[in-house]
Image (cartoon, rainbow, N blue to C red):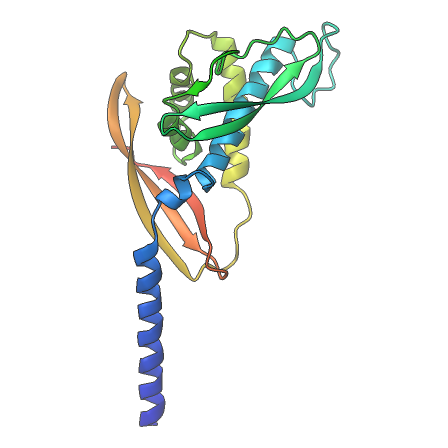
Length: 219
């Protein structure tokens, strides 16, 4: 019996050391690097915003069955590479229309710098954001004044995209789950303040890190 207990203790020690080793190597920057999950989330969200811009201009959503007001239609996408604050490049699929009259406002034609969006994108994916807070973040993402109707259209699309991500299926088991925190700038009562964003990170049975959820502190 004593030998079994000792063996059990040794196994526990090994598991503890393994956990400590994995956690010591964990770094949220892996989620925010060039090929990290955050880049994928950012790309998907920005492309969705651009799609909603085109929907607003055409007067109907992508899957709308209502009658179209004119002959202009969607016409696929074209790739555009932009450079972020960090110097990293991100390739975006920009929606096009048949008449080639669509002028994106978030990333205008000819613009190659895509700056100041990281904090807003992180906040938009977080739980606990009110509709008015989401609209405020979207308005800040534009460097020029845009119409309330456009912001409303984009908000609906962003909410759909964010809810889909928040409700996505996760693995049943994550051997290791830990909490990390980053600070982002956010507007609160027309004042820009630092807010804590909590990241729940899981390590699946294959040893890969996944971002399970994002929560923004209220203060």
